[in-house]
Length: 132
Image (tube, rainbow, N blue to C red):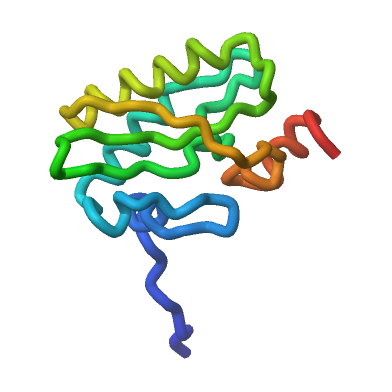
């Protein structure tokens, strides 16, 4: 008897697939070849108070590239408006993106208020005992 199985996406394909908790970046449409490397690199930028990276936390809300100006812009938010590590976290993200993309990069502050529903794995914080 044979089972009807559907092929499962590999880790790379899973990283590319949008999830309900992950925003879609402009570069996913305009420069899809840069998305995976950028996500991987930005995962090394960790919020020192929470111990999770800025991608997992959902702090990078958008990335766009202006080919005419040869520059990139990251739109980010912080977990709290008065995060003591905020300026350093934003600068480290900017530097990391600039290094990966090979072009000048700026960071814009987004207007969204962070909440735990923005975490990629919505159950992660609960399993760690941080919320609910």
